[in-house]
Length: 258
Image (tube, rainbow, N blue to C red; front, side):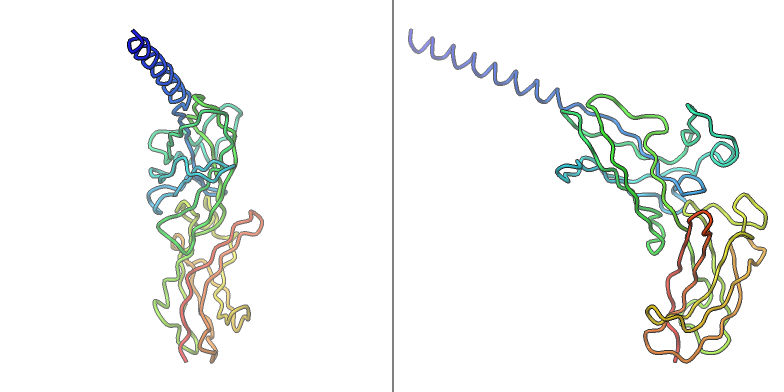
């Protein structure tokens, strides 16, 4: 009789514990969060420039709750760049527009840090940004989602392709928004408002500098710079600036020949 009661009590306790465990598991709701990573003064950062990396962490513990890549298109130009923004509209939430959808398991309202870096296809031009947000279990963030805006340009030094020779050296560079959106004369992204210069630098010292002019070909600036005799660590680089809108970019550097 004693053993029967003991067995019954054990089964009851185990059942209660299993029920509690099941309740705890159910309480850790799978909560969907949509994230969009966009280029300041431009469109969504998509597959054309390598996409964006997104990491969601518990802000208190640093534990990674979700991570992945944003891939897809840059979105609708008219909705994002031309139409007036009206509260309640979602200009970034259009078919094929790049985004990242995460599923996080949280059992209590949790402050998270959402970090993004892009463009993944151009490591020298990558920028990073983050936001914090309170998430509530089971309350999903869909549609346009949480938007993270990154500033900067993608600047590629096309010529010289390797070492910059001493003397008068031709320089060609390609400059684009972080989303890959194009610069043209008088266009939506207006090349005429940009300042682009080639520089020979040795650490913080500027040894030579020359302006580059817009070539007329989308995204391409060109000119010449007089490369001086320089120490072994000297490098040629190109800087692009739109100070009014707080966007800047820098190319990978080329060594200077001696």
